[in-house]
Length: 313
Length: 77
Ligand SMILES: [Zn+2]
Image (tube, rainbow over all chains, first blue to last red):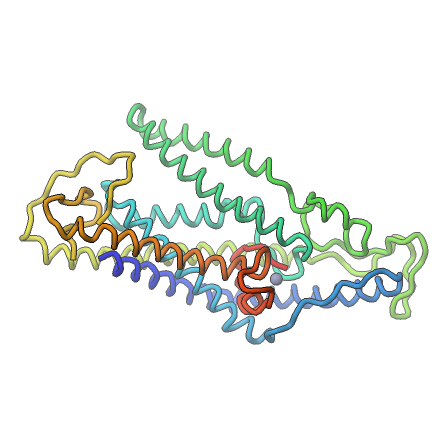
């Protein structure tokens, strides 16, 4: 029973991952390629500038797999693995929770998927949005990684707390009042959270980097225009740049917008597919199981949902 | 396999029927293993060989899932 439910969740996730891969091939990869082109050009300019100024030149990232691999089987692996994992987690969440809500299995699956979409992706994304290649400083990856995972964990906890609060309040107040109060409480908590966590541009390593070519004080790590930050002219590739003169533009705002928009749509696609497919598979599975057992037992009245986790079998 | 015909319709397992009680530990194990595997997948797609690395910084996994790591919203680069 449990294994077959989990397999259905993971299977729904795998289907969602395949759809996400198709979506990514059509919409994300052209944008990713533009971002990588920008990055290569930028890295070349930075290397030349730093060399000309006698500064240290940052090493290139590794190139283990070709872009052809990364943009096909590579992105497919990641999207399908992520989606299947989320589908499996959704199935586990369903198995743990189903005894606590008197609602149709499909509806519970949809609610849990919405919870996953908001907690795992959208709420963290509001504070730390998805970035294409070229955005993100190598020397801050540890802090950025921690901050992102803190956002994910805190978003999941805050959302869950809001749901528990709403259910508690619903015993005393009307459903509308309970939902409004807990929604306000959630927004306050979430607002405090994103207010307390630092903007990436304010990380000390980024503040310290502002005296280097291509870095400037900014709220994010989006590549700033490269200007001649020296007080003397500098000659690179036969061209002389005066102090303050632009050498290479900042990251294209339209490319960034497109990447983030497609990233958001991609997650909507993943979670919606998981919700619909898993919900449908689950109800078919339960209906088949229910028919076999129908004559074995009479309907028992459903007890009121409790706050304590009911052991699942 | 179990005596529950419909999820959600009947939350309390019947204590009188032994298969339920017998499988409690097994069910817990199945759920735990699933959660572990799912979190491992999440970790390897989104985090490994970036912020932390489990099996050395070879960058093979990072580079393989690279595009999806960016597209799924994880920090990278
Ligand atoms: Zn990257």
